[in-house]
Length: 417
Ligand SMILES: NC(=O)c1ccc[n+]([C@@H]2O[C@H](COP(=O)([O-])OP(=O)(O)OC[C@H]3O[C@@H](n4cnc5c(N)ncnc54)[C@H](O)[C@@H]3O)[C@@H](O)[C@H]2O)c1
Image (cartoon, rainbow, N blue to C red; front, top):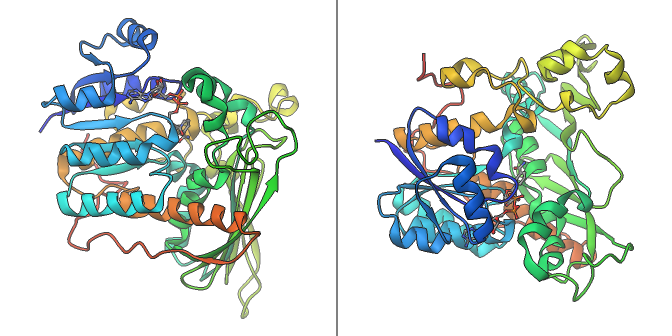
């Protein structure tokens, strides 16, 4: 079955995926939907799309032959749009997060379970080299049992202005002030996918914003959210502890999404900037040893250029976070994509699009399916409730597991030789 896919929303982010949707060997046609007329005109010129609809809703109504949609609208819109798309019988790729409401998450799980349509969340960080490295190492048993992990997403509000201001109309600040923990999916996906565990309760505290530039505070945004930064402690189902930071007022740049530590009963992984180590501890007679693993995790182009003068003087150089790393298996990608070494978000975009397409075509369950997406999303929604209640410890509803009779798509499956 060939894929006809409708891209919904042409703000900043979808443009970075268009060359992939347009060139994937198993996508027959790409159509678009965008509510802003000037953006519709721009995408006609820029991407040469033959069919462009005036909204997601119009596309669902008129484009019967389109069997898949990719949702690139603002984050709080995803849940209701995913529900409508699944109800209309479409396979769904959606940018993070899954949704901003617990009931919506359960509704989406129910729909995917019933229809067996593909749903995949576009979690870039699942394919970040540090997450892949920790996931693969953890599976070997080298860490022992999970004890403690820290991951975070640091991104100052000032860097979001293009998207929020450009698409949000007069109310754009009310949307931009979304609780940080409603976007905890990057941090949670990296850590939870590595240790294959999920949290059962959470305690979260918030940093009450003091800047007064109209994003955070009671009555200021749609969520009455006063916090620009939130830190959560989560108890995992097997007893380990996770610390997740979601900061939107912070003097940091890159790395922005990363696992800073993952500690097991036998070994730990630590990251400081571009420096990554794996240390086995002196436990029960085991020899203690430090492996310097930076060159396995950092992008090839960073490693290649790291001794150049600009890399020394400009630690925020783009080479750090662009392109493939040795841990990426690029030999599984469509042949013509293996050369895309300039890909942003640590080389993740190609894997996202390719895994979605493979899942639709094979009917297999992709990575970042709805059960995993919910495990990266619901704990953050509950964490914000905890912060609003002064750090009260709250239980996280159990999401359940993906059906065991639904065959899994493996990240390493090869179909393009
Ligand atoms: N690393 C990552 O995973 C990552 C990075 C950046 C953005 N994102 C996510 O990607 C999504 C898009 O981000 P962005 O920066 O492009 O946002 P944006 O605000 O720039 O663009 C959203 C677009 O959707 C359009 N839209 C809204 N409602 C619509 C409807 N009913 N029908 C058709 N079009 C509609 C808007 O007009 C706008 O052009 C967001 O959810 C964001 O959270 C993820």
